[in-house]
Length: 125
Image (cartoon, rainbow, N blue to C red; front, side, top):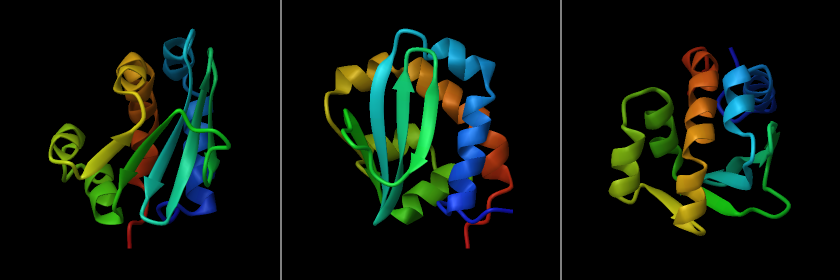
C-alpha cells in the first residue's frame, strides 16, 4: 500500500492512467498540463492528444494549477469530501483559464475513474 503522494503512489497513478483505454480516448485532441498542488507537494498531469502522463513535482510549464491543502486532498481522495463542493467553497482553487479546465473535463473525469482503485488502496496517514 503506497503512501499518498509518495514516489510509489505517483508510479501507481501513472500506471493506472497509462493503462486506461478510457483516458486515452478522452484525451484525444486535448493538450494541457495540469499541476496538482497539495500543500508543499504535488504532481503534474500532462495531457497530450491521446496520452496522459503523470509525473512527480511541478510541471515545467503548467497551463492550470489545482491548489489545495493536504486535508482537502485526502478528504476528496477518500470520498469524504465532494470535489465540486470543495471547489465551490474555495478549498480547491483553480489557477489559470477556467475554459481550459472545462474543456478538459471529460479526460479529467476519466483519470479520476482510472485512479479510483489506487486511491482505495492508498495509505493517507
